[in-house]
Image (cartoon, rainbow, N blue to C red):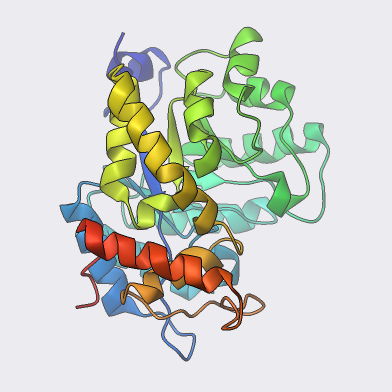
Length: 317
């Protein structure tokens, strides 16, 4: 059964194949900290021409928690002008149901049909409260929802039981798993989770192992600089092409480590800035990689390797 058949069997609103690779896009900022919309537009165009299968706008890599609602609306609007709705996903995490609904409505207004929603951060709700939270959201929107399990940011993990319960809701279609538990897809499937519920690795480093344990795809940060290579790796896996999959996995493994060397999105923005694509500006309380930090030498080498490989983003030129 192919992905379209699986999706139809799950009785959800999608009438398209769900992309197996989503690039968690950075949000370019000017030196003064305001949105750099021309560069953002160029990045979107570059990803479109490089056939990035899907882009996540305003996720944690996009510094969503540090954006105003007006900036959020602006970024979604600009993205929807350049890419079709089926290639866009909007981060829509918030502390309360009304806050999340407002973000989902903003995404809906520009035609985005899929939203990524993490648990509320800091307050550490119980598993019962998380089921209630997501169910309330699900019942008040008509978009498809990807759960986002990221305890390093929220302080609470979605239990397997909670995921199994929520997977029965028709428009909760999958999971972005940033727990680092590579065997989790098989754990969940052994407890009855169907193959139609799409499990995405939320960490580039664990993606190969996650796929091998039954995962479907990845929401990638490395894809900001190597979208084609990440796409080819995922396609090779699904096609059963072992040699190119292993070759790309080996090639990209040290890249993944550098991309997260000083946290996300600090490191990936430093690499993009060194490649001449964006300003190395992040929103406070984040800070750029310190100029005296020895990791900058390694990041610079990677930026130069991108250029030498011909995969350098020409977006800012």
